Length: 316
Ligand code: SD4
Image 1 (spheres, rainbow, N blue to C red):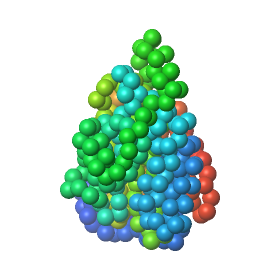
Image 2 (cartoon, rainbow, N blue to C red):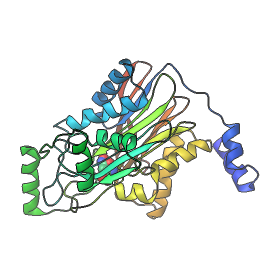
Image 3 (cartoon, rainbow, N blue to C red):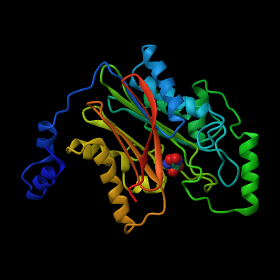
Image 4 (cartoon, rainbow, N blue to C red):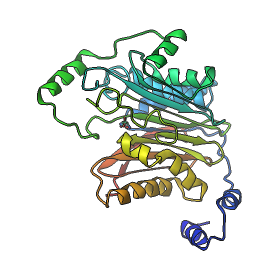
């Protein structure tokens, strides 16, 4: 069903989403892993994810491995080690994971742990909960054998000190480079992860979209998965990744689904948002898509054995 047909059907009220979902059953892409990650450091993240798949890991293992790669990258100043701190000088981390069975785990406002994505996965696998925050998340991480580490590098500390003198309000897109990664393994199963140190010099205690299931990440193994980067507050308010997946369920292709989710944000801001949001989407049949609000956005795609950086121009 084409999008306009779907819209017409929707307006007429003749076709319920359930019937649509059934009539639109997607053929699963198998034996051809697909990995899609945000920004240019998605390239090494994809390589790490692929290595995990080659070592027999599944989509969740691969997504976690990809996110860990960005977390340890000292050059990346918005994820994990080397991340820029909040206004008080603390590096605080947000991360989440979701697997093909619909399980989810997340941590927010976590400090001094290099791999929040792995803590999020342990929350998913070893607790009855979905989300742990702050000191509680850290205590849990320590109980699972994670070691404390100072994540504020000299370089990030210097930049923070410089910022303290001017206290200029950072525009969110200036230092926003969250790593979100979506994976389809050879069985065709889907999983994803998201990890960030968030908005540079944010208020102490601020949590963005990156640990919020449905906002920065959503996985539905029947339909597809989606993930976000950009201004977390706006991704949360529009339940971005869940919306992208639901739009794919209704028949939108991955590109259209990302665009339509952004159209809602544009409308909510009277046609003129002054921030960035980028989405990546991966459908069950292996098709991928991406879109962003403004400027442009890079994503790394590994498909058919090739790992390549792609660029999409902003809708506005
Ligand atoms: C946040 N969404 O904390 C994250 C930041 C981000 O690219 O995506 N940066 O709001």
